[in-house]
Length: 123
Image (cartoon, rainbow, N blue to C red; front, side):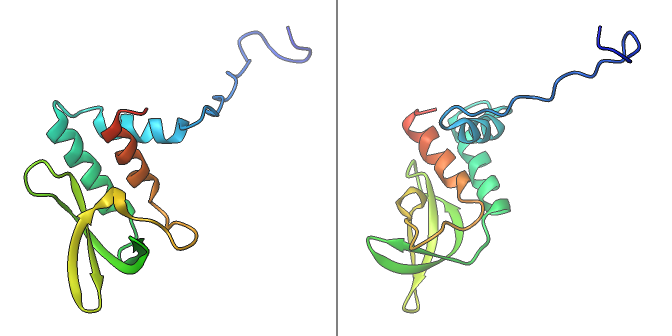
């Protein structure tokens, strides 16, 4: 027993951070999918997480061109989550996983990475 401590006064060790590659992303995927019954509900959970965590509007690149991302929408049919982008006064809907960053990614973009990894089953 540790010196100077009363029996039963030991505190549990703090949780060990998940240092595995992709550990944070894995936790986000689990958070988004835990209460969803099927893939459609899981995708809806990712959409909600993006709506709540991405700082709209923000800048991004699409095929090397600068755009302003103003929101996210469910894609028609089975096309997945789309980013609503504006460029030169026109709105475009493109796959959210097609976005690239001209510099440091905006806060909340880990949800886009989690969605991408969930889509390809790499988690």
